[in-house]
Length: 253
Image 1 (cartoon, rainbow, N blue to C red):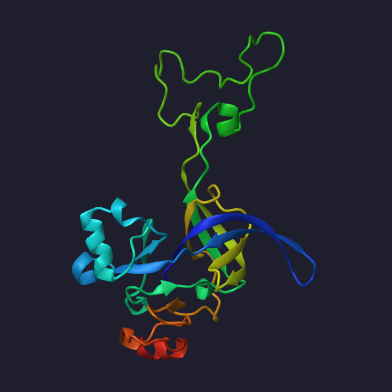
Image 2 (image 1 turned 120 degrees about the vertical axis):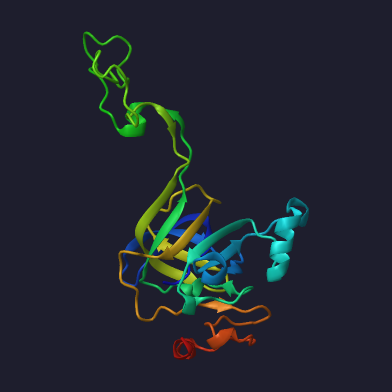
């Protein structure tokens, strides 16, 4: 189980394949996504990576958070998220995950916050058909009708589909295909729509219902602090300027 990443939704564009096919794609940007801390079984009871992305002004960070980022020797981050991983797939603290963490053709799951629609009626919120627009219905064509029974049960059950607040929900879109990656600009293009508005933050991880391609780097592609080129993890977390290739990581696992 590899780590995911925190990205920001830039917008949508079109991509033309070599065969001339038009593919609608969503552009996701990795805004300096770095490893902030490790979660271990001995200390926390589980194994995970805490990642941070984006930037914040130091004056907007409280003292406790400031110390947390200082321990990792990274700048204050806008968004934080944790990803469960195996013990042999931990990425060093301070490393920046790059866009080639994902390979073209693999499938990913994207989680984000849907766009808020405010107070919506049952037809928009739940796709109700509405009442008859003929004789007998008086100015209530788009209402949801009755909500409960008579004296028995004498109430409206919970979770009844009615008018109410719509949107601003945690939404996960499964099995989106990676169309293109740009390491220099930190861009990952996925085929299809991603939940949320432009500029919104999302989490991107390997698809749980699709097989992982063999060429996917393990534990991932990242850039160590001060390094000029991205690389994979080294056995024992050696701090080299450019981390060695993937086979070395597998030998040390």
